[in-house]
Length: 88
Image (cartoon, rainbow, N blue to C red):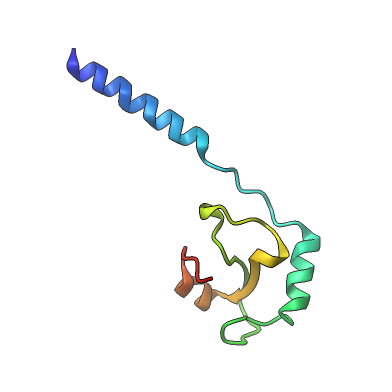
């Protein structure tokens, strides 16, 4: 009986945690354009013009928003180096 209660508690906790997860929304086109213009179409770390990606300065998973102030252009290499960290 103790095992079934522990299993039920585990399932309830998993469901509650899943419910709290924020849904990722697409970055608005106007915001993308503004970030691209501000960053002059270059990676903010190395200046590359290839393989550019929009990166959240404060990661979305840590509460970052899809705003011009929280986004930057990074090349894929620099974005992978940064990972899911907040370098603020």
